[in-house]
Image (cartoon, rainbow, N blue to C red; front, side, top):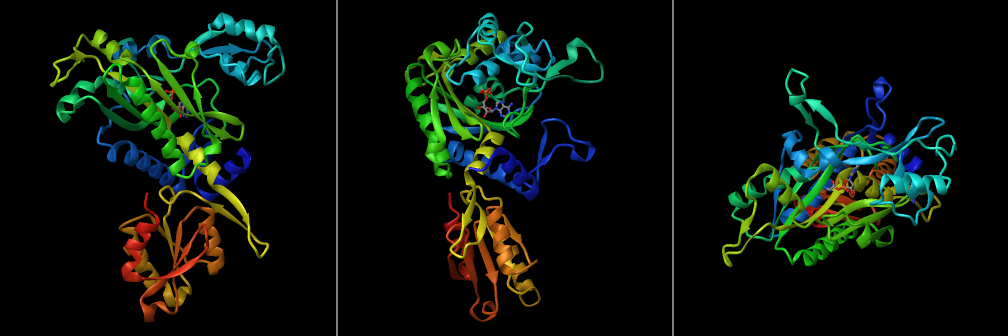
Length: 456
Ligand code: GAP
């Protein structure tokens, strides 16, 4: 696997990811997604919606607001409790997350659920050094709330203070009743949402792994109490299958089942799917069985009955929830890391290949006229025809070998070349990115051929 530096270099030079606000010297830890990156993000989201919503008989979509009534965050516990343990080096005054310092100090230690006192004692007794200056003394640990605050309207009054959502999940919980009523769904059913979330992280970093603005894809799956552990296992496996079906090697992935003592007080099962990032296995996807904690909290705070009445058995209950939650950018990073490859050919030449699953490739197809003068017009027509169905790119500069290499390096799955024969046989040469094998395909058969080859 490439190093993180190599990947960052690749992503910037190809137009997958640019530094945010680069023209003005940048804004720390912000990243913008260029032409290729935007397409990859779109394809990741579409592939998730396809498997977690469209193809299941259970799940529907929601698009709720980033800005919500502050009471939502009071009820959910975010206003009081969505904080990280902040500590500060006594010598250089750099700030860190205490739990992260401990986990980095000893990878076998998991400080989830530890009190501030326990963490402070660990830092002291294990002589944990400041990663910045090496000093050994730390200021007291305090809770740092990660919610971004802003004001609605023109008056900067406490009453107008609102938050940017730190997760998309709460938008789903507060609409549980609306969705159940309007879709006439019976339990079990789930709600999928894709959208931006914001967290004022103490230590963002590792490129796009941890940022303050990111996109989440969350499913809240509502089921009958007592059935939740079965559904937990179903969705846990669905997440792993989704990753491996999209080409990530199983060896690069691991389940990290949380031990009972490390579970949040409302959860009776939680697992993380970890990916082998260049700095080690780290969290990609969190899957939690959250009981009725969230619906109960909103029912209590809003004073609205959120319970479900089973039309067949007449039982009334608050559904339990299974929540698989993943960040689009973390998937983006994992897919790029596992796909970027440099191959030595029989000729001794090397070629860079981005072996993305075709469903994720920014461009499924590149259309190339063999000779610009003779073949450009027909190649452009074919490009137009293909673009009605899939993302395709047209490229006429430099020799055909260089153009193949350029497309291999950005993951384009098929190259369609218009040549001297095309006029006579109404066919084109189609080259596969991975095998480099070439076949002749009639123009009339091209769309079904592409659809079959890039099917997901
Ligand atoms: N609703 C549950 C929830 O938000 P989480 O473990 O805090 O759970 C879920 O976040 C996922 O969102 C993580 O596994 C990760 O993929 C992504 N994520 C969380 N914070 C992130 C950040 N600062 N930058 C990028 N992705 C993040």
